Image (cartoon, rainbow, N blue to C red):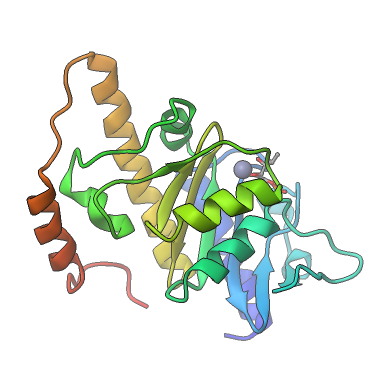
Length: 215
Ligand SMILES: C[C@H](O)[C@@H](O)[C@@H](O)C(=O)COP(=O)(O)O
Ligand SMILES: [Zn+2]
């Protein structure tokens, strides 16, 4: 895809993220790897107002186009691309249940085999740091190496995948997992989790599972 097509795809992904109930207001941001950097949503702009000209190119050194302001979270988007060669798209949101679990500063354990969507047996929660900082990007850099989906304490979710469709799909799956976990926590009962051996089997099966969003 060329820059215009990728920019339109970013906007469509943002709008779909809101339609799925995964975000609100101007929270969240979306990027794709592009040339020697990435294309990313602008800061503080409602998704409905974005045009392809609003999307900002940021190079791998953090330089961006004059007259445009990229998302305040461009540091952590670049950190994801630096940490993982196997992903080309990043979605960040403040989805209700993901944010709720992140406020508890908890990772989501293996409550359901679908926890394997991130590539490991839990969805990690990285420590809190102020939005838009190098410290937050550093926590993201560490956490995203373990899992393609991570919670940011007292903030929200990051999901990274091969393309935007897959990244949004992953974000949606993790929000469902987070909603189950919040319901389970509310019961006050002990929460059983799947054993590590079973999760190893599921993780292996997921490598060739065919019903995930096509590339
Ligand atoms: C304060 C921001 O909303 C922050 O939470 C950021 O993480 C976010 O989600 C949206 O910021 P941008 O509009 O700068 O992408
Ligand atoms: Zn945010």
